[in-house]
Amino acid sequence: MSRTPGQSPSEARRHFLRQSAMLAGAGILGAGAHAQSTRSTPKALGLGASPTPPEANETIRLGVIGVGGMGRGHCRSIVRFAKDGIQDVEIVAVCDVNDLHAEQAVKDIAGAGQATPVDSYRDYRKVLERDDIHGVLIATPEHWHGKMAIDAVHAGKDVYCEKPMTLHLDEALAVRETVHNNPEVIFVVGTQKMMLPKYREAKKLIEAGAIGKPTFSQTSYCRNSPDGEWNYYGLDDAWEPGVNLDWDAWLGEYGPREWDPKVYIRWRRYRDFSTGILGDLLVHEMTPLILALDSVGWPTHVVATGGHYIDKEMENHDQVNLTIQFEGEHTMIVAGSTCNEVGLENLIRGHEGNIYLNSRHCELRPTRPFVDLVDPMRVECPDIGNDQDEIRKAWLNAIRSRVQPDSTVDFATKVMVTVDLASRSIWNKCAYSFDPATMTASRV
Image 1 (tube, one colour):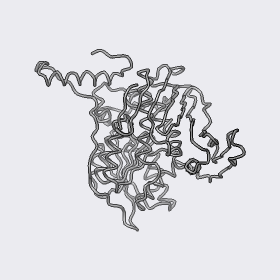
Image 2 (tube, rainbow, N blue to C red):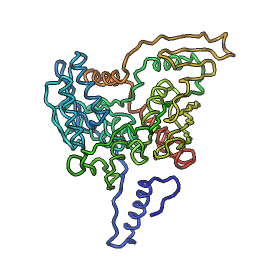
Image 3 (cartoon, rainbow, N blue to C red):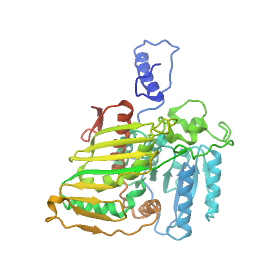
Image 4 (cartoon, rainbow, N blue to C red):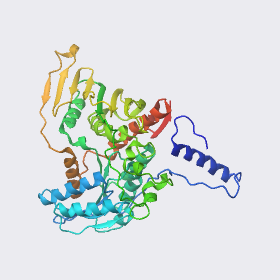
């Protein structure tokens, strides 16, 4: 099986398997030929079970799917909300293919002060089958987000899905359609900076015409990792595939392959399981900026470059640079790095004024030719504290109020257009376009 330039091993396998399936259908392959696809195209689902929100004085009951580092962090925060009287909530189920992670999550929840016992599962579908659970929080690796999110929505559960919403664009489009088909379900994507007030203030200014036509924006997520990004996730000799860890279930449609503890715990470094900087880091910066720039519509053209400048062992890139054009005639540039921590200023440029977003506040300054027409303005924004806590609270409040928070499936899908096409652009060394009318992408 040969690989074309820019193809990952799994993509090469999928291409080979598609060809094999066509040949088999034509009766060309012999009876002994067989193959197993590593990834099927996700299908959007129609109307599923109706959600059953908690009664006014009823405790919100949650299941948490994926309780590695991020998942356990969610568990501790949610139990703290209950303990501090912020929300009447409890975690009644956790799920992980790693028994040791699930056991630790149960201990963490009890240690944080929850008295209610927690059931533990390996199969996430067992969590979705429970009628007593109002919502599920998905904190698994990226390659499971799409399927789990679709299944959870169809099961009538309110969903908090960690970012990025999916690994691939086709999965994002399927999740979006499923959520739209089930509008009673509350669906939140856990993008932290979506809760910062400065982006909503910028949105108001832009839509009021305060900067004229928004033409050009920029953002970044840059940090420096001397030992290699995500290598701080340590390996554990206690992990035993087939004993206390279901490696095949973790791989899902991306298996089978030999056990590799580095891939298992440092999956963000590997192309088959993550887009690295693009999906794991840059979504935090791009999503709220796209919220502020909602009026410019969908991304329509993406070109990106990436390099292995320092961390040459990592399969994903340690430096990426993106240029994104939107249907409303706007260009966004984005930089991501794990080999230098100095990023770009968060800035939205308009024909008549610029909006500066590097601080907690939102500051409007006129461009030079319009200093006599545009008044400078500084919108003071409150310190909301931990913005990740705020998006957790927003989801829990929405489970009761049934009012969808801003971190919606549509904003997440716009970001996935950018992430997916940027990843393709980097690996295939060409530009990609997206047609919002048909929701299709193509190579330029």
